[in-house]
Image 1 (cartoon, rainbow, N blue to C red):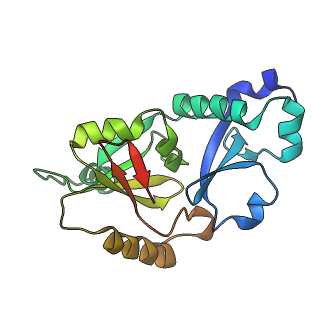
Image 2 (cartoon, one colour; image 1 turned 30 degrees about the horizontal axis):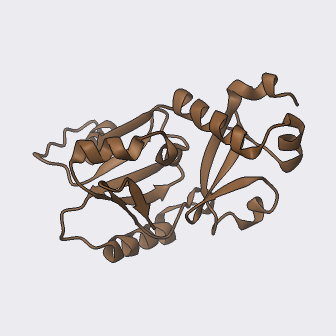
Length: 190
């Protein structure tokens, strides 16, 4: 396997370390909080340690290429929950001010990786003009909730855990708790 042959097909996938322990024993990854970033080709093939060695580049160099490719081929989409519901049902859902947003990509596939896109969270903070919670809905999307002061991270974590236990397939699980993004620090707190 040569880098030139796969360079434009290399992307990242964000997964939950807790939920994918067996897979992570077999493939190279980067830890990110309680998540893991793995390498893929064309959304289908997960790269192994041997394949990474064959490429003759460090994991860090490959990560940079893969993030850039992912951001290019899977552009981020940040929309209100009402917009998502309207698209799903064909009905109009209007609200003066949305309290929930969805961050994913145009394909709505492996969209949690948008968490790692260059300045993505900073852009959301600027748009919302406040700190916000990040709910790891699945490997395909994240839910963003502006911090209004009346909701706690603990309450949102309970909601994430309940959804994980009752609504998601094991391979789609990302994390079992909410994160908090502080806009003035440009940091996520697990």
